Amino acid sequence: MIAVDGPTASGKGTIAKALAAHFGLPHLDTGLLYRAVGRQCQQDGGNPDDPAQALAATRFPDSLLSDPALRSEETGGLASRVSIHPAVRQALYERQRAFALRPGGAVLDGRDIGTVIAPEALAKLFVTASVAARAERRFLEMQARGEPVTLDAIEADLAARDLRDRSRSAAPLVAAPDAVTLDTSSLSRDEAVAAAIRLVEARL
Ligand code: C5P
Image (cartoon, rainbow, N blue to C red; front, top):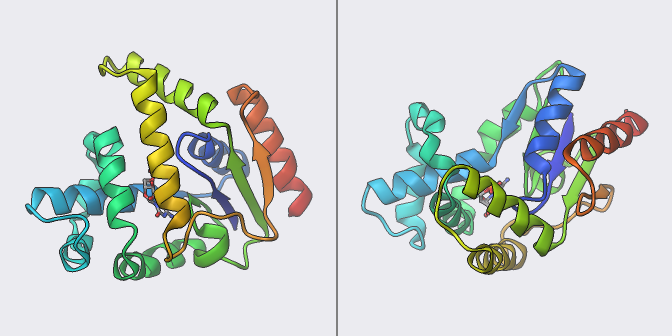
């Protein structure tokens, strides 16, 4: 089982997908589950900061997971808010744990895979990058999608999201003690993937 954790736009999703393809393993993007909760809560007219209303939204239909709107910055912000509540994290735990325990192995990416969901994982990567590098990547992605945005607004949003993810009391974003850190600030996509494969191979 391979755990990939790290902040938004660090490259962890790209790396997790590439590792899954390289090692022939199924992949779960756990951020998508929190995004679905945030989106469902909004659709229900609920308040994402209210623990009971956020918890009710964990019963979202599976079809929501394939909605492209989950990828938006707005939904990312909602996800970050609902993910603060311990009851929400608990409600999503079993689904993630079952995926992590798949007999043939699996790759999961998120914030607390190596610390909470699968502390026994053989290979744990903590993928990071500077706020400037992450903001620039997100800026280029959003520009390519035609979303109107400024680099300053993205930097501010990333910094706010980082602070919320790192300072929450339930499963804060932190590298597991036995995780290997991979800083992708000055790496191309292919360089980052190659480095991740080397690090995982050294652990398996
Ligand atoms: O990774 P992604 O940007 O899709 O995650 C959206 C939000 O969901 C994060 O900002 C974080 O607050 C939350 N999250 C989490 N635990 C995870 C995955 C995501 O708290 N395992």
